[in-house]
Image (cartoon, rainbow, N blue to C red; front, side, top):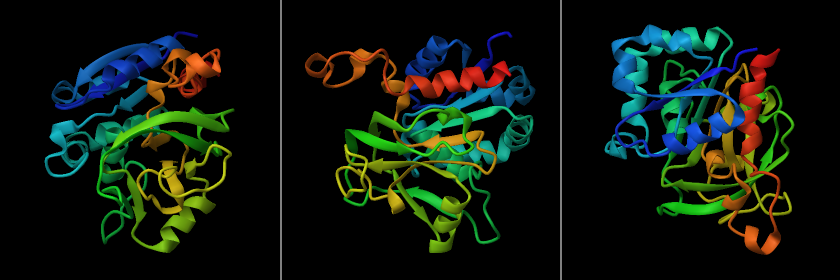
Length: 257
């Protein structure tokens, strides 16, 4: 089967599109980086792709909040195209700023009449966090995470605090299998700061939508696809590949069946 086509959607301030493209190309996808203005001019162009990616960075400088302007563009100009893409059983990934935009655009959890059910707020200690974190993975129905139980990847964000509007919403996400990534200590147990770098409820690091085919996460798997990207590889030795690589390979092989 032909390699799937992946669209890495850029916006002003995006700065992780190159790393994300490298990861998908290494996994075997055909990758194209497109500015959001180009997609707004021709939304039907999205039909050429099987994987849509919102990479990390600081879209529009986070001037009115992380991911808010990009989310507004998605809702007002590309909602129909993205909905058609999702309903065609294709894959959508959002990393860091991409996760923020997807969540605020309602791509992961549809809003109700009172607005969004969850958001990503400022880190509880009000500082930008740039560190490596351990993740427990519960793949459930998410094809991106198939066969993965643990990951060690970096975070770099100031607004990664996952908060649900009501406690029952968080409980419902857990019961439906949509909470697929949690921050943990090195031994896999729950821990406070710095293991959970932002104060997220229930240590949530990433969620998927009800289908499992739309994934958003705050940590950066694209920054640990090579074994030499591990911060202690010279002391602990090289693995065959970085912990994030399997996520991108899973996305590519999803279309083999």
